Length: 592
Image 1 (cartoon, rainbow, N blue to C red):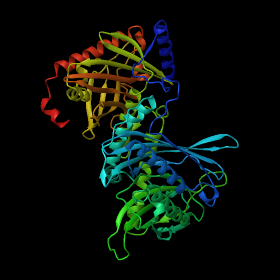
Image 2: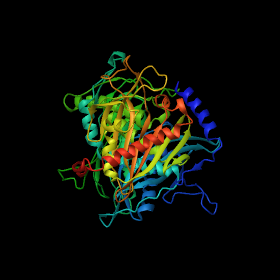
Image 3: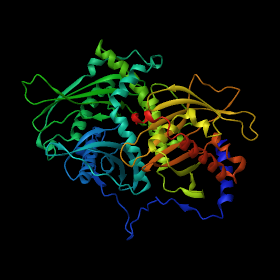
């Protein structure tokens, strides 16, 4: 239905705007420079490596540990190119490996700084492989690393990145939300583990083959030598990750009695540095084995002298392995019996992390058009749904190819036809403080005061300070016999840096407490909301975005020719609402 309605609407818009020369948004930046040379990000670093036998494992495939060293080196060079001084690895986000690389093939790694904050920066990494004989290429993985600049044992305040292309603007915008996720990562995992229901699949498992977890335990020690360290004497983050991958692979092999393949790594977080001369103790054990995958936990501790009683906790990570048959299909794994005490705790936590990992990979990694409009809401995915909600709106706002369709009294209506979606963007300047406008617009219970498409709004759940779920009822429009209702997650964010907007993002979710009812026709919204920019003292630019779906299109298909006026009237009502209430809620501004 959505595709049919969208097709009809696109045809209608083609007839309405065919005689008008669309003007691209003035923010659009071409990828070519004035002299005709192709634009290249100044922080971009590329590395190409030929995979030799010394880089491979027993199957003739590139060792993931070696790949992690190359990734870390490339990303570090990019970070140092921007910072102008030495940098150290602070963390590496989740990595999912899509393809293995064999001896004789070439690894191409590209890294560039997506965004710089005060003292840290996010570096985006893309890894691909190629067969120079057949000219085939494969995507291997994408990674996001955080680096911190250091000069003479002190942190360095970094200069800001100025994105130019649409891709750079998108990554720059979403990087702030990813940084927020990293800062609350530990607390998020702790909360999710406490609230996540365990699900076991033992009924479909062959429990006749049981392996005690203790049999998979591995402990190894490494002496940090000068080749393992950078020019400051600190151990390369990639080298530590490579050692961790090595002991994790041994632990996984002891469970499956085969050669396992590493498929995913959960976020690495470096708690502190290690230097030349340190001894690193690496411990690994299989926490849990599922039907076709297993989780291995790895811990790294450092000490300087053998007589030292205290060891510094450097890093921890969780790695997911599978065992592939000759057809590259995952094999069934034996059941693991945890040790009492800490072993049982790790076993339960691994089950919870697996559910969290699947939710996170699905919500965060999937392309937007591959996701259903309404995603089930539960404590195990609420953080990632909120992240996706904000980042989807930021990515929509960062697109360059918005076409100005109409402009009435300095209120602009822009449209964007992208894949199977038709998106709308309204923009105006209002003489209201940006933080005040943010407060007024983020409470959906007040939206019926200015938007006739919102008849009634009920706050269903105040998830936290920034996220809330609402039940929205719309009036009957056109020939539709029933009013529509929506269950909407509203996520809001304050600016991360100067120049960032306030963001209010909306998307549909599914709640067991609010199923579809015969009284209403359930509508859905995929991506909509506000970006609010501070343009000066008491002057604010308010932008509204909506990615059209079947539920939203019903409002506009009845009168396509009058669409501009319809949007204009609604947006002017929004302006009047902001102006009439600009003196309200003054004490609440102290919380922003």
